[in-house]
Amino acid sequence: MSAPWIFDQGHYDLLNSSRGSVLRSLLDELKSSLGLQSAIDVGCGLGHFASFLKVLGFDVTAVDGRQQNVDETRRRHSDIRVLQLDAQDPQLPALGKFDLVLCFGLLYHLENPMSAIRHLKEMTGKLLLVEAVVYPADEPIMAMIEESPHEDQGLNHVAFYPTEACLLKMFYRAGFTHAYKFIVQPDHPDYFARRGKPRIRTMLAASHAPLDSKLLVSTPEPTSPVHPCSLLPRPRATDAAEKIIRFAKKPLPEKVKVIKRMVSGEADR
Image (cartoon, rainbow, N blue to C red; front, top):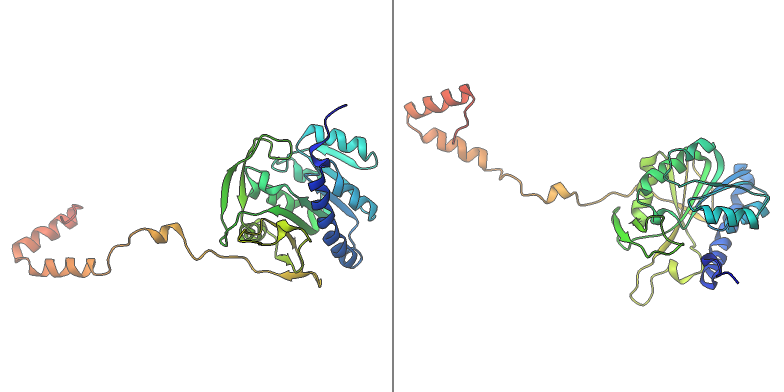
């Protein structure tokens, strides 16, 4: 008997159930009003959410970076078009535009999540939905994480984990004009801070036009209050004045020499 697939474990069932409940509520609200028909699941794993969207009536395409995931998804869901593609692959946008782009549990496993978000933006016709583990900080930053060598981690087992603010900022910088937080996150411990531990997951949305939803709150592009260059020592404002005073105190012959050096391009020492 072969070993069970890693995505078939119980903790993934609980996570997917909580994510699916929020996803269904949002799509029940927006599918008709936005005219959502086509969908792509980027980083589909074993096709759980690709199948979920198929049941909701979407014309679904699914992609994953691991060939074994693609093969198993095809076996389980023969009515879904499944392709092997890395989200960072520049060929991904060539698949075309989709009304709905879904990317759950993937971006934080990538070496270049910004390039992936640019690809997602190019494919998004109306709505992008993202679910991700987030680095626990308030600023729009990323941290490089060495991941464990398991099949539910990144392809190269090293990845940049963005903060929630970083994901939102990347949406805007990739070209989305609107970004949203979910008012109610999935009913799962990972989406809430507890017992001194930070929240480690989030669900977000982005679009090219305003969304009218009771489940989403519009969120402006985050800014960082600290820029690394601002931490460098700056020349004192009095330096220039002190040089002028020193120059004024010099005897006339020395002033002439200084001026000649300046004209010839030599610096006044």
